[in-house]
Length: 133
Image (cartoon, rainbow, N blue to C red; front, top):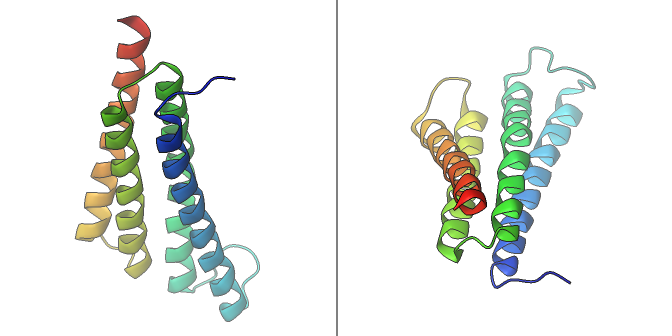
């Protein structure tokens, strides 16, 4: 069975991001019950914002976690794994906080987006580096 020292790191960031996604999904469902809107978002701003936070998280998180898995398989440094994992996790939390508050741009939303993109950039470059060098 394949095992590396970075496998527990992968587990921590995968677990945290799965729980973040579940929490965001719960917020959508709770807002649906409160507003009695079963599909779409109606005209409910809180439901719309909760839905956007969950949707964007579901768009970005899987590809970043795939990047972490590939980095692990390629034997990436634990520091690279932590940079990707921390940037992703903190970025997703900040983005969700920013989007949940308002549909407008907010500092948490902008920083969260930037951190998420940094995680993806490091994961992408790291995958290429460890695969080709």
